[in-house]
Length: 243
Image 1 (tube, one colour):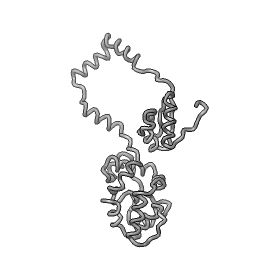
Image 2: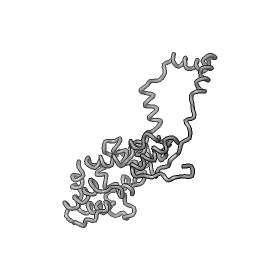
Image 3: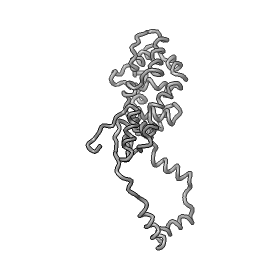
């Protein structure tokens, strides 16, 4: 379903509410004009002011929907992963119009019957970073794919930990397992979306790695290249006393 088709199913009062959420200056009262104003804002307008109103939980709801769930929000899976649902998916939709303006979410601009319209989804996909993997689930999936060690292999592993000759080999390997790669800078981004962008954009990806949800690690020898990449993206890393 396209955005226009989804909006066509709403009443004029519901369309006016969404037009106001979108910040459109249009004051039309005809249904066709309201739909045109909303689609113009969401499909071709600047979404940054709307996106900035989302909480981190709401950003996660959009990200899971566009990156993992094929465009339809799954409240059961979201609650299982994050512990709670965004308020938009908790409250009674028939009382939404009576909520105070400051307590209203902008998610109704993106979700229609818990689905994101097909033509709006690509824009939201670009705005929202892919949600983080669940580490335990990811490791378990890899374990299943690779298979558990068989019994003979398990015995060999135990022997490798206890045999005298093997123990010396293991110690030697441990001595060379780590190396000092030199100093690096830990860069804190304003939000996780910016960190994901810098870690994946060709201008900066080669000079940094993710070090957490909002953190990037930049080797000292790559700092100048990282700054140049930021400049190409219109960003600036403030100078510090250390450079």
